[in-house]
Length: 537
Image (cartoon, rainbow, N blue to C red):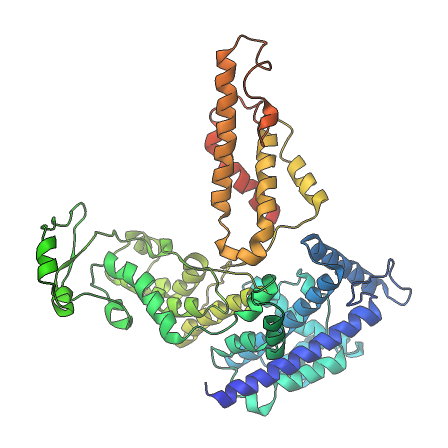
């Protein structure tokens, strides 16, 4: 994609952002009495309809929820405004890309004159009396259909979906996206990534850097580090991680040896068999000092590769801890497709042959398997998570289109998540912990959950660097040590005198005095994880 095309995408993205943010600002302040300075009217105005009153209530709840994570009232309102604007833009960009690939009928390229909407309106003639003849309903129906597979972007339950551009603003948005100079970009896979990068105003980035040498919050961290990783870097890192793993599993007998052009190999690699140890090296330290070998000689020396057993491809995981628009994942998708096909052709995973009646059925399901099992991503920017989810879904559609698949398996989940703080409302936490029970064991689980909840407030800045699993393990180890000390003391003193000597419960951060079972410590970590998982669903 040349610079002229990228500049056109940048201009369109910035224009769409300005349009949507101004439109939604006017709605928040003028209609719903929610102001950018943080002032929120105590009660809804009498000018609101019943439906608008419900929307306002949800908007206020969304703002309050953001405040509970540590934002000021003004920042909470501005954050919601930004989220509403970029979510709406990302959805319409997605529709343009779907149109270009023939995955949906024409729906936005000619607005209310689009063929898809005309067909929809013909099936529901009663919509003629509606102000926009049902165009919003039609588009939202498409969003709901897409949410079945790309929920991270199209989920109607997202509070960012509460606002909708009014008629004039909607027409202006469509005019921006349908500009002639952008006609060819929507069919290109990288367009969505450039929309992601160009959404932020370069002047805003300059102001952030002028105000502080280091990012001051999660948003600044995302905005100031939002650039495409060069393609050769993506390929080098992926070739020598995912590619190298499969290369070693197949002992070099894989087409990835040619497909991964940056894969680092030695000319004299020797793959060891299972249980085989490399030969011991002679002690030639002094000789090597006196007569050092050249780089060419070192390169020709044999290298013994430890045995790596072949895995079911569904068990090979790739995690991008700062995934952005999923640049690494899209390249990894290509490698995973090769891995899955080789696993079938070479009979490396009998479970796969047992699961499918034939190779054609198997290959048709591979794109779904890759998204549901193999590629994982984390980012602190919710925009990135939306776009990464869409990018992977579009990549799967490309394979099905290229192979003329008559049936496209439904993708029921993806593994792209936004690293964000736990909800900060204290009453919500108290209610949650209370449901874990009032027994001694329930109280300790609750205390561990509170500790994780507190640590998760850093998730927006630390992202995948926050090692919650280690935090939980360390906390459980501390609680177990306290329990062991109390238990040893009880065995050393006469009954009834435990409270007179030795450690007291008040010395410890966890209320472990009532724990009676050794087995509790074996499953407490899983109980904490299950409790957090249930709460976050």
